[in-house]
Image 1 (spheres, rainbow, N blue to C red):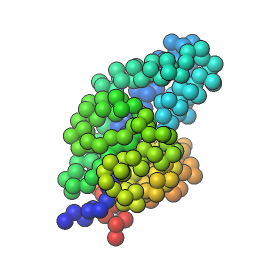
Image 2: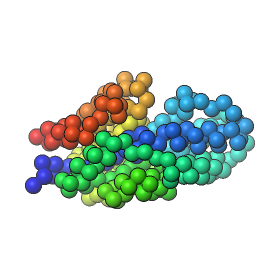
Image 3: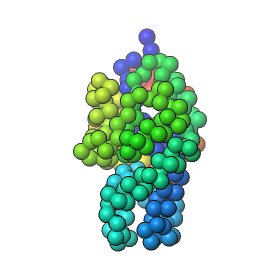
Length: 229
């Protein structure tokens, strides 16, 4: 019997399983440039890490007084992002190892992401993670995106798991807040180092302040084993 029986693991996708933020930034930069905002920087982009694409473009419309509608901006950004996602997304090596380790022990796993279903599918297929992660929930499929708990609760429902038995891996403060609201434990791996002190992360069961550089598959696995006992 697996030492992890009874536990289900739910992964955020962007910035947690895969290093997709550079693609999101590039898609956003190109979209805004086309709509008359030529100087969107990485620092600007960091403000939107962990927020759904829908919410991001809604904020852009008002902040930059864009003439295009929110649906137009959303379609434009998603189209550009998908082109990049299919060809240029890298899975974090230790995360891939962690997924493989959990799969070997028969742990039920899911992805819960603010990205569109098409983007999630493109990334999982492009990285080969779709071999292990067959259950995926997009914020587009639920009433509210993170920090609301909806995506995580829906992932648990699809896995047939009690939220209290689920552990979430998250890189962004809204996601950590969503995990807490869902009644799930959280392993937090902050993508933006400056956000490691965010109050949302203080409730994480395991906080890796150094982000992906500090994360190892073995240490995360051992924490899960210990957290059961």
